[in-house]
Image (cartoon, rainbow, N blue to C red):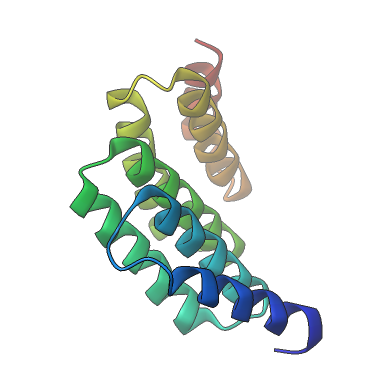
Length: 135
């Protein structure tokens, strides 16, 4: 990690240190940190940080933040071209978006699932989720 990226990661870690217990702002910072690690190809740290965000969102019993964390984890797996793990994360995110009645985000999640299927030439499955996205 070099230059601006390391500075940004250090800045996020400094902000995280200001929280002594899980809270929504801390979860959002953890997601941001996981994404920066992913961008820098520090994949072990990215995955650990995503898992920490998930655990803290579970502790808050927040469907909204669990959905967001799993959605971003789905992106992580999509970028790694891992169909199985990407689908697993996106489907969990969709369930939480549905439970918290975040319909616009649920539709976006369905779109990501459809695109993931489409990328792997699974046309029937992709079509099913493209249709769900529109409804």
